[in-house]
Image (cartoon, rainbow, N blue to C red):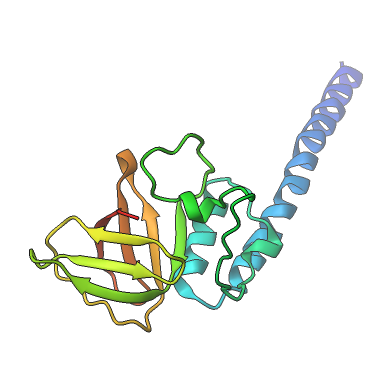
Length: 168
């Protein structure tokens, strides 16, 4: 009887150890991803990175590091990048990109008092709601995909956003 009890406890200990071992190795990429997110200086970009890690999406350590924004070059033979197609209504494939970071080159109001915003990447977006939203040219902005293909423009350091749609 004692021999069966000892054998049963050894088997249960080994099965617990085998179940625990894969969890330890599965946590390693998450710790690396969290460290990569912690290295991002922009608080809004850092938060987006943490959200992706929490959702279980893989965050590439090299991509999580801040990169200098370069002006996109248009080539008629090259395929459009995910940033170029972000916000277009006739999107054939979902690239999984839910947020883009943009810089404003020009912002003007239409006759109804809504913003028409020209970004440095060539995109033009228009405000669709009626909320007040200041748009200084030197701010860090992001456009985030919402539910039912809605899009929101937000600014770093401001806990407010407006609903926008891409017009060009």
